[in-house]
Every structure is written in structure tokens, then in C-alpha cells.
Length: 143
Image 1 (cartoon, one colour):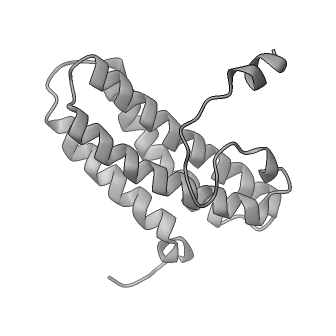
Image 2 (image 1 turned 60 degrees about the horizontal axis):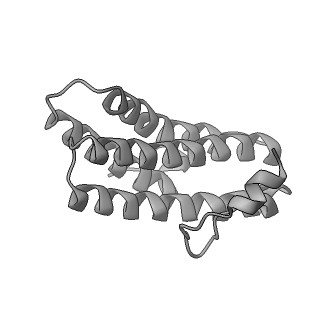
Image 3 (image 1 turned 90 degrees about the vertical axis):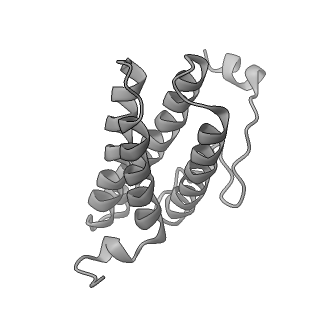
């Protein structure tokens, strides 16, 4: 396909668009009404939109802000999948594959944030590996 905009050259944008398409198919198979279903639709749509908008900004600060929002949307998608799983509206195989895809997207976004943001050192996700670890003591220190 012909490239019309710079964002289309970004691997993370291509992954986000692919994930958004997968979500559309996935959600069409769920007939039950669920808030997490609607939220997954919105968050998966927000993901490539924020990447596109961020890539179109000139300042590093503006770019970072939109890449942070895209990262948040990816994390929100993962949580929506967890909710759909525990409510038995999705199966574990679907969720695992989708979360692996989201982990790659988050890794790429963290890489972009490390490039454009001086605040990237506070990110908990590793650029090369997305770890699922929780440090409860650290969280309670800031409350």
C-alpha cells in the first residue's frame, strides 16, 4: 500500500492499527452487552489515533504527551481483556495472544518515549521487555 503520512512508516502505528482491526473482529463475536467491551473498543481506537497525532507534533514534549496517552490506551486495552476474561466473555487463548501483541506495542511506545521524553526514566516498563511485576511497597510510598 502507498504511504501517505509519516505515521504509516512507524512499526508501532502498524501494530496498533492491526490490533484495532483484531479488536473489531473480536468484539463482533461477543453478543453480550458489557462496559468492558465498549471500553475496549474506545481504547483500541484511541491507541493508533494518539500515535498518529503524536507523530505529527513538532516538539518533543507534545510528541511525548500523545505517546504517553497511546501507552495508557494500550494498558487500558489489556485491563479490558482481563475483565472480559473473568466475566467469561473471552477465552484465555484470545486474551494471551492479544496481551502479547499489546506488550509489543507498549515496548515500542516506551522506546519512543525514551527518545522524546526526559521523564521516560520514571516508566516502569522496560523498553526491551515488558515485565509483569508489581512493587506494592513502591506504590504505597507515594500514597
